[in-house]
Length: 294
Length: 220
Image 1 (cartoon, rainbow over the protein chains, first blue to last red):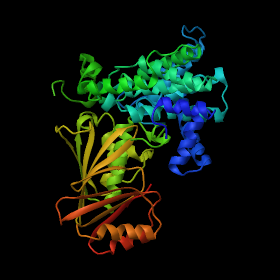
Image 2: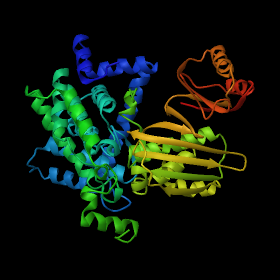
Image 3: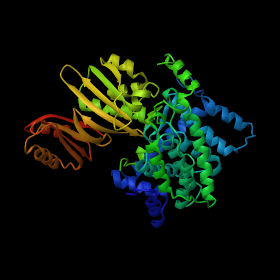
Image 4: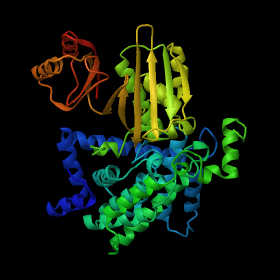
């Protein structure tokens, strides 16, 4: 079993297989399930992701609190006008990341990747890049196994929980996973996947978890958008041959230690950051129908 | 390694909005229901840390009640679980606690009916993955993700050997085992994580062994 990113990459390189294949083989060994069962289960996850993106970009989504919904659709309309600054593929990824998270906020069905609060980033990048890379269904499934392999490393060596490590552990991890998987999908090497992971995660270090009114909505939906755009930038940088001065396992460890030292008020307790702003407090009081000075 | 499968990372398929606060909560509730092994009439849920601060916004309340009703993380009935619990005759109460716990997402569930009562403490460690850290006052460390057998017994010599012999007879492989007791010679709890789901016949045979008080199990 690989314990860190270095071992994961080393195994892919020495066996001359993809990161996704390393993950599939380990899953078969670890669970005793057949290769077909493992792949079919991932296909089911892909189908849920596809449906959530479709819902979020075409239906009128509104969360119970009314705080979020409709922004993914707004961005699709903007892309359709054909005059984007960031480029259509990037913004399509951003829109699809938000779509998933808007569906999540509305208590719709999603696939946690690695968590529900950060569920938009990995599928957002995949479906946003679909036009550009034209992946087959099997390649899309491999993208998810590659993302899962790196997420597995982060979850076991640091954390993927906002309550334990802040939003860097959720959207940060998701963005790093998407960056690494996108490199594989675009034909990059396992080493380049590791570099993309390091670059993405480094840029989201220290990100606090400060949900307004304790809801997985503000700022979560827009942080999924940023996670997707950071992932694409990091993947492009790695494919250009840029490396991270700090190795990827050390970046993961830094993320863990930052999470440990982060104040509890900034770890999903809705007691600090944006949740504690005057507007954050006012929205909380309105949504739950309670007095401001509780 | 806390996480052992890729589907802990890419998954679970679930109803939003939070894997640790919604899916994890549903899973802890479902384990409690499974181990209670019957229909509760009362459910008291004590929430600590981040659970206590944000449970309404994250749907932790509806999710844990859904779990107590035996719903999976992706069951759409979770959204109506409070109404469905009332229909099923379960009186549910939530308690927000201030105590500082080792893990920020900790909950204690107490299920009761006229015959029995059971208490379980679970933590939600992220991405929908949970661990059960206490049952009826016995400390343990158990992921809810594998089939497991719970045996409450009198702390006497030979009981553990008799139980493991019976498992060997059924060709069950024990992946992880814990024994915990409150006091020497008193009540004890044995928990075994096993590789495959457990047949009812084995559970019945376990129950009939000497010094065994209660047998329960978790299916995969």
